[in-house]
Length: 636
Image 1 (tube, rainbow, N blue to C red):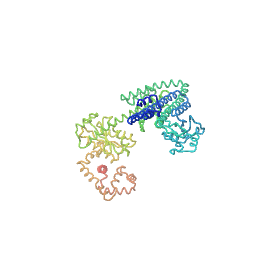
Image 2 (cartoon, rainbow, N blue to C red):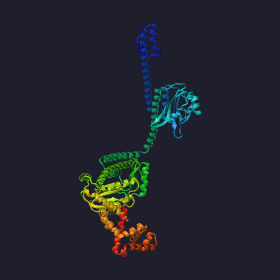
Image 3 (cartoon, one colour):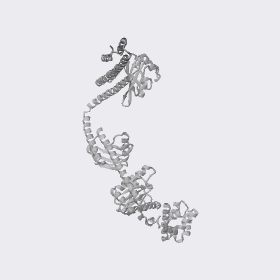
Image 4 (tube, helix red, strand yellow):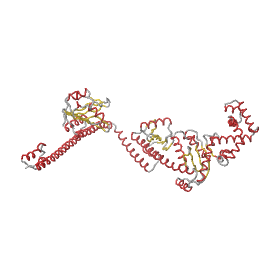
């Protein structure tokens, strides 16, 4: 009697699928009831599913075994042609197709050509070349995507050409599967499996051919590398002395790498990097910043010619490696696109490639150290700038809290300090120039135990000491060198304690304004050094302003009023006359008018101020009043 056990026996002996109908046929002949037949039908379905699963697994085992055998075979091959033929032959065997073949991309011609075939009988087919995008193979080569067709000639997804269709037709191919040969992100060719009759390719077969193509690409690259290695070995065998020198240089490179890594970890500086390079390579080294200023120097090495250095550093930055100019080697110190400086090495002997890598690695470490130093400086600068901004603001906040913040930065607010205000002439229109000036001021102040901040478009520095004028001149001089343009700096002080700093800053700003009004742009001075005008600065804007106004009205008021009513230039003429030492001819030349015009204007001044206005006492007061008038006009 038929039972489900019979299906297990069929599975055990790997019977054909048609044999699984036998138990049902026997059951129907025996007249078994319907429920028994249904049970057998269900058992048959399950058995066929199990058989299909076993068949798929067996097929997968065969494929994996084939892939393993392929990898083993390819590993033993050394000649590229042998590798390619083995790949194509194994593809044909594993997929059970009539033909298998491979095309490789020709980078020079920009197309793909037939390289190896297995099972092909057409000479025309074996000579085919496909433009990128033409036919199934050209499309795979162009897109890097597998394509399959059960009937190529009737498939309108592909760009058919007479040459390709003629070759395919002569070979008699109908069903074609093509997968890309990938090497990294590049497609180097296409691997195909094809039948001379219509045949759908299952997903598993596509995956199998993709796996074979992956092995093929690696094998092709391995064969290429092997050929290159053989060539390299031949060259190396003829240069044994070079190998020994290289081995020594590699040891130096490893030692240099370890040393530079250690100094970065322990917080070393550019000086330590320079010492490490010269210890390993010998010679002397100069480390420069982006402006050509010295960061470190080890050994006897002269400053290189500026033009030569600029050209060499630009070449190093472009090429991404060190360059040689005469006896010197240059390595650009860069971070991304930003130029941070250069290392200039004068070695004792010749540098091999590994030695150059040491220099280049030192440049990279130097860039990291400079970036880290700048980041720390910027963070500290922000903290210092915020503190100074709070100190010169009104109303003053908690003085004790400000003292504590300053103490943590190493600043004693109760010690004497001067305030220096830098004029707008130091800051160009671009934001990068403003940041550069502020960065310089922050470094300048912090190295002297002071503070710096940007306020209302200007830069202000708080520096320890009592010499306000000397500090202003030093700031104007040094910052002029940095910016390449004259810089004006006004200072006031000394003052002690948080409460007095806001007033001192206001006086420094007025001093800065006065320098411009007095024609002293590009200079540095303090309030105390401006003489009578300096004494009046403290009164401008305060209760003393009434006395200043009274002095101006009494001394030059009639002349100022006359110019205002008539639109004349008597004040300008007086300034020019006193400015050239009382020479009518030189004043006329300066004003671009005739001498008679100057004479007539001065006669009018005499009528307005009185005949004695040129006597020494009156003349001094008139000159002071003119300067103060200009100051009030510029600040008002």
